Length: 322
Image (cartoon, rainbow, N blue to C red; front, side, top):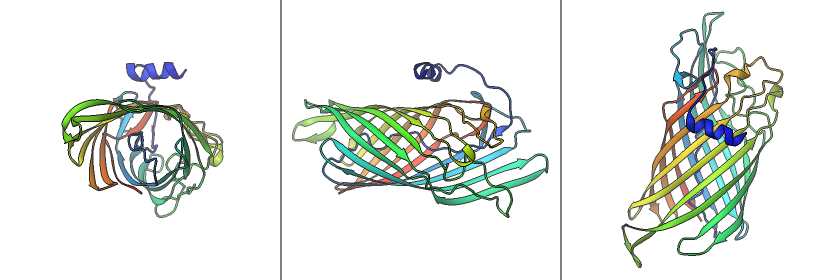
């Protein structure tokens, strides 16, 4: 089934039915740590994502139908991750997210504009990376297994500004569920001549990675269950100056439809297939400290029903190795 879904993403087929829009929420499906292992100490990473979902999309095309009530969702997501090597083969990481989100929609029955603005702790996640295989040659290569769990630590209920109904479960900081994930990542490199000059002349190892991660979501608030996800990522980096690297990734996200549980939400307005190209830059501030930035540009977005999407996602961060 996963192979079939992947083929559908790359082929960009199928159409979606007309329906009222889903507000939804979003985060950047990007791999931040595959190319920056730190086997000798701790790594502290602080990242910030900005995603403005201001376009209603129907299937693979923009929707201009005025009756859709969902107007806009602005996601500001801050994440603090601390990772530590347990041995030469094992690495443990914990990620603490902070969610700041704005959402507005038009209640057609009451002809009333409703807004939500909230911020708070999101759902904390823990991961264990295990090196399954390693090959030491001109450019070291390794195969990693990642397992993880997301805990229901985030706020589950957020009332509208001025009082009123709670925000939809899909956009609050916490889903109320325990989720599990498993993934494989292959990391390698090729030796190429670059503009840099060192002990071996202009020869530099250009790293690359490919990864696949599957996330199984549990039931949370009001028995609601977010759709399972498959993330496919590949990326590399290339030095253009002594302390400056160009970054590049291809990112695909396949998300199944949600199970609404005991809520009245419409599952046919959830899930979709997304493909992005993510160029970026990383600048080394000083030894073992760097800043980075990505712009994640959609190549293909196909949603079920009508959903809010963003024309581009932005991500910036700072990383310190100890």
